[in-house]
Image (cartoon, rainbow, N blue to C red; front, side, top):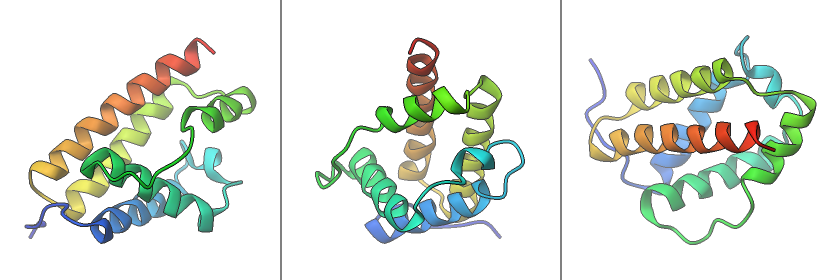
Length: 123
């Protein structure tokens, strides 16, 4: 039986992010990009980012591109990496949630990945 609730709260977003990174960290395709993260800092920051994206929350501060540009200089990010990231994100959303906000999260992830891939290819 699949999920029957949508993403409606900050707690839902945090669950999504925690479960997503639980899939990402051991992943053989993209896990190596995440080995040096301080998870106690990263999880709340990314949760705040997605609360901004999905609910217009204004608590997120930061520059999402800067760290990715620096990482890309050490570990180049290629199209298959973005495809894997999106696959894991979609799978996590679909495992946990169902509804308009869940669909929006997946669509926004596609947009974010596309913008990031483009900016990294030109930086």
